[in-house]
Length: 467
Image (cartoon, rainbow, N blue to C red):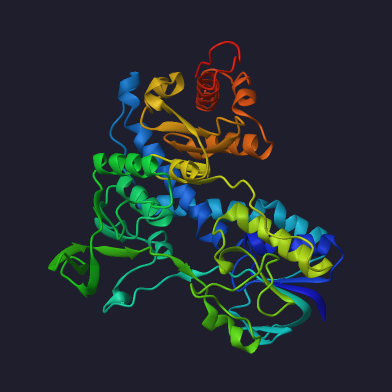
């Protein structure tokens, strides 16, 4: 019998297993598929690989502007898929996590097939592997949320879209959150005709309103057709071109057709496969595993970390939660999930990223100043012909504390990490403004925004910032 069994070898599960073993617990890690989970095998890693290919195609089209003669880039989609597979294999092979798992003495059961609960202390896999433990952590991620409409079986998930063997000439993407916009942006760059559908009034609705507007504008200029508040889906049907979506908007039936329809309307836990009822583990109203602040489920010795609990469905947060869940499983409930600074970003074209409060939310809670620096006014973006976008820094005028930052444009996901570090360390805009950022860099826009904020607050921070 193990002290702890971790189900799922994605970021949350691997970190949970390492933390538990480091604390001296006899630990087993069991996964239905490959080590690394969805993030490494059919999620973040392949998405970023395809997004990089889209970036290369875009940059290749700029070569004549810099006096470099070449023909227009042509996509060999088969070769791109081969490259994505190579990247995934390299990540698996060179992952330091696997070395750490072995060094710490974690027993790894890989490619076992689906794992389910037999009782509250026992799990069993499709290949017959049966493990018992005093404590269990569920880190199985989730699956795409289905739509309860006729013909839904004719649609694809984002995971399906990213593993296509043939590039579709046209695509309907239903759901314009982070996942849907990435799918739309990538395949638009590859030459597919994209229609993007969002039920609410704006795409990426969890982002700052200016971010949503800027990304939507850039998408439209790139040829993506965006349908906001598109109405209610009535059905999906087969058509001569592939699939037809019938929806009703303002009492009128409307039809949209494409070779492929991708539904990206959310993420839920696959509780049927896990057989949670056998262990007495409950889900919440949204379909995620119900957990408390210590990541305990309704059964005190069973914990849940990562996407499966619906708290923050991102790799860095999953890693944090794996650490917290394992600490509490081994030592007892001593570490609660806090409100850590969590930078978020997406590899669309243009990229967007954020940390902290949106401007709307900040104004509900504080008196604020919001400084906006357009990318077209910064040196590096002009040099690279990447002038679409902006950086918006939000601060509290009473304390000079940074409340949030929102960026649209080239390298936004990388730039936002600087602000996250500044916020985590408690830096004021004055202190951030005094850092002499290298010139010319994309990151320099942060220093310039901080300088503008400090000056608006009447603070003397020295020489003017360049970026």
